[in-house]
Length: 193
Image (cartoon, rainbow, N blue to C red; front, side):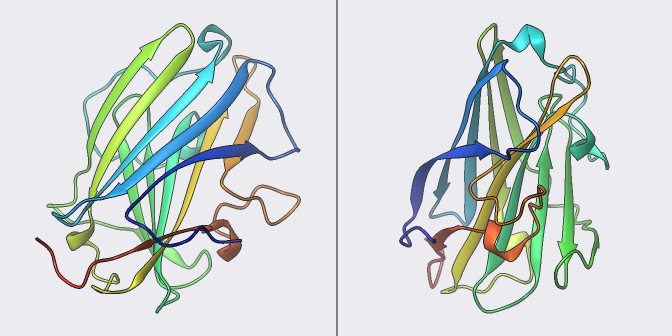
């Protein structure tokens, strides 16, 4: 079930039933398409943070494999193409980007101008991560198209168990790449301001 197209949304992510952590009370995200062709995503993890493994602050840089630990993810596609992008944002400030030609048919995406802006705030009962992605750096996105988005999170408990959170879980096992996981729609303007 897709949400009506708009330029901003606030959504709750749900946990896949496979692994649950009693330390996590909820994960939510807000997303906003800005006039300057950027996508602003804010994640909020409400939890007993001391019972989770949270990556320590690091130099903001591109790092692969972030999904193996606590990280927040965004999948971006237009309704006009099977191509899509995956972004991983770690509470450490590190990030990764991947480009896909179809379901799980992808590779790391390199673009010197892509580096997302990431801001992280932590306290005892929540982590907030804000990320801004420049959509004009993603060649598969076409102006005037409808963006299909999947927002998700991988949360690692202090015992090493991973829980998987997403807008929608279309399969029994977590699969953020599943086309039905891209359950949020935003209208991409015809031109930038």
